[in-house]
Length: 137
Image (cartoon, rainbow, N blue to C red; front, side, top):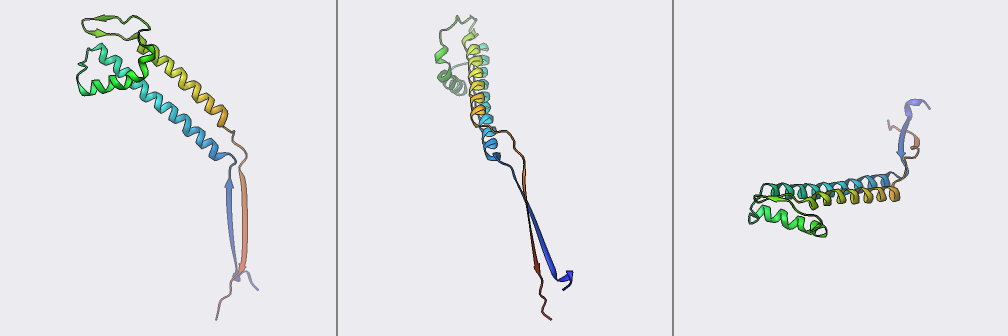
């Protein structure tokens, strides 16, 4: 029998232990930072709108104020709010931004410590199959 009648198939698969858990950890931490970014942007918009004395009856301004009130009520009345000519500087909102950033950082670190697994060695498996080819004349 010659080598012309033999067929070989080689398959190599590589697996990495704990890869799915690392992907979950990465996505969870990215989601935490995304939520923080959205919250910080909304609070920053609120601060800007208060500084330019935006009309609170405007639908978009009312939406931003309503959403951010939910997150800023624990900080209400914490400091004096300087104002001049209708413009208001909410120092408590700036403080809330710093506190929420620290909370997000702490939650992200906790998720990382609990769920992250370091990268292990890549395991490669090679499978070879040989078979004879039978040609009919």
